Amino acid sequence: MNFNPGDEFVYCNTGYTLLAEVVARVSGKSFPEFTDEYIFKPLKMTNTLFYDDHEKIVRNRAYSYQSAGNGYKKSVLSYANAGATSLFTTVEDLSLWAMNFENPVIGDQEIFNKMNQKAILNKGDTIEYALGQGINKYKGLNMISHGGADAGYRTFLGRFPDQKFSVIVFSNDASCSPGTLALKVADVYLKDEIKTEVKNDKKETKENKNLIDIDTLKSYVGEYELQPGFIIAISEENGKLYGQATGQQKFELKSISSNEFSTIGVDAKLTFHRDSENKVNLLKLHQGGIFDAPRMKPFDKSSVNLNEFVGTFHSDELSTEYTFVIKNDTLFATHSRLSDIKMTPSKTDFFNGNQWFFGQTEFIRDKNNAVIGCKVSSGRVRNIWFKKVV
Image (cartoon, helix red, strand yellow):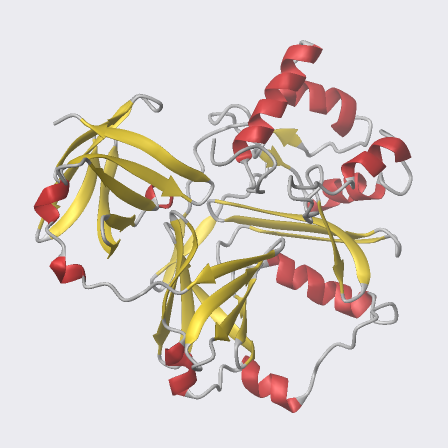
């Protein structure tokens, strides 16, 4: 486990995969069969299915893409795991799902209330996540929402129950930010309902063009550790800020104020904070809550003896192994079925990998200071143990 149940909240795809298997075993039907019979057909969602066969041909399917130099390339999604993902639908069909909450064809108010019940952590904090839905406010209005991202697909559904209004945005371009677009639509349609004034002054326009002085932008450059195994690296290029989370693609930051930035292509916001000496020492991530990411201290990468980490490491839990090798003065993690993973030193005995599933590796030493294993973490998975065998 990443932590004791109830101590923290981390979104978990595997949990939804498990729930889909529970549905299958209790009902005696596959999850796609069950949802088709009891949800999609009653709602007349005729262009919706859970895709559990990656070789299946689906009429009018939209493939996903990502930017590649001066053009695009296909962003491949080759698995078919039903539950956490693999829902094929259309904006029109998902509208029928959204309207069901106002005029139920399936379900009732009792189950809707359960779906809206926010979770409470062991220490008593209430989080914004409920049963498959984010429960929060947007400019003073109650909003129930969820987004999705995989390969080059980007999606968002936002419901405003008090106004009986929903917005759905789908995209097959990895650079799209559907949540941002959806809320712009909400600003237009709900302008008479919004309780917080929408800013549209000259100052904001200037800042949104990233016209912050270059010294201020450069003061934000550095690495910020959101949690063990998950680091947000901030860089500056041609007067613009960029962020890159462990194992993920780089995204552009758009200024809201001198220390507050929205993320292009990702539904989140970043704010930078200074200490008593006016040094930037903290980044806060606003995404389904507010999370602190302290700034990491500078580390001399040239002082690392890479030879100490060379060897083969085996995980009993995953039944696989990686071999760490040195190529051109750089450490790489190699695997028989994967491309080489570049490892970059971040602090003593810690390396960042350039693949999302191999975000951070912490090498463990014995009392004689010899490396005996490593722990691999990456955002939603922490401290997978690999024992050194060779």
